[in-house]
Amino acid sequence: MADAKPETKPKKTHQERMARKKQVIDERIAKATEERGVLILLKGNGKGKSSSAFGTMARCVGHGQKAAVIQFIKGRTETGEFKLFKDHPQIDWHVMGHGFTWETQDKTQDIAAAEKAWAQAEQLLQDDSLDMLVFDEMAYMFKYRYLELEPVLKALQNRPKNQHVIITGRVMPEGLLEIADTISDIRDERHAFRLGVKAQAGIEF
Amino acid sequence: MADAKPETKPKKTHQERMARKKQVIDERIAKATEERGVLILLKGNGKGKSSSAFGTMARCVGHGQKAAVIQFIKGRTETGEFKLFKDHPQIDWHVMGHGFTWETQDKTQDIAAAEKAWAQAEQLLQDDSLDMLVFDEMAYMFKYRYLELEPVLKALQNRPKNQHVIITGRVMPEGLLEIADTISDIRDERHAFRLGVKAQAGIEF
Image 1 (cartoon, helix red, strand yellow):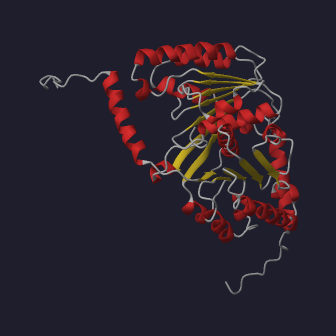
Image 2 (tube, rainbow over the protein chains, first blue to last red; image 1 turned 90 degrees about the horizontal axis):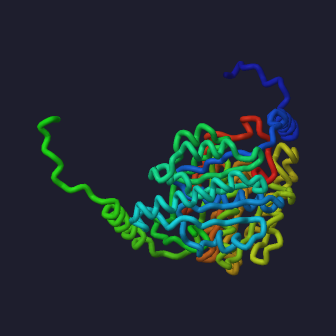
Image 3 (cartoon, one colour; image 1 turned 120 degrees about the vertical axis):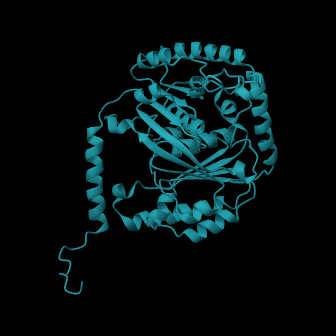
């Protein structure tokens, strides 16, 4: 409008706006005071779930903490992550799977592998020397009904107070979603595979 | 319905269903034959973008490949990822940022830092001895208009054919989305911070 009053408030400088933003953020940070182990779920159909778990583990190990990994599906030891981390003194890595269901084609074997992996996981969940556990692709165990959810929830809730747990897998059961502290849903908006690019060492495994 | 015909087709066994699934998957895999460097964008407001980039880098390094990282915003060297990876012989790590805009509160300094980081990035994009580049939090440079997009797109498109690039940041500019091979959108469904848990070493940094 031509007769609108001119803006009387002087325009804030970049420094003033950023100082105000810092104040807001600092107030939020001041409210978050608790220190404890968190349960992180990385779900969805996009690329980045397991890699994010291993990247977070790298972060924790860099601070001198101890971590353990259980791979519930992968049975391969030629992955880059295994090769890099297997001999690290702060990392305890368990490849417990035998491959995806369409690779094994053997439900009895899959269930036996799931139960064995869970027995191992349950021990780790009682070991307070471990700062972080990664249960890679564990979520499939519930989808396929290879593992019962209740004992897992109970063990997660009774774990050492400062132990972080990261669970990956496309679809998470409701009970896990309920008790999680952080949930990221990783959505596939595009994937090189559909553009004709094969799975490459260093990217997909 | 009581008078419905009984199912005449015999129910497929688990093994038969999985064999069929494997066939479908194998056909898809057979179509993806190209081997080349891919551009991966990790965007969205959820936790897991940078950690996924570093996890993928760990994968690549585990296979004996070489990687370089540029951190466009973070100016901190006390992160777990830096501590773990900085001395690795296959990794070249550059902390080029000075913190978020509300931390520096100095636009001139931010722009100078962005330009310096990009000059470094441009060199890496011409170095075919590097298998993977991680440009951590680079996307913010376009959002804040600290870097022009066009020269970046051009350098990405002219990079060595087998070089992978991973770019992280909440919001990606349209031009980057257009040329990317893989895009994951990481959505924040829950975050421990909002439950009162502070940023913890090994999880957030």
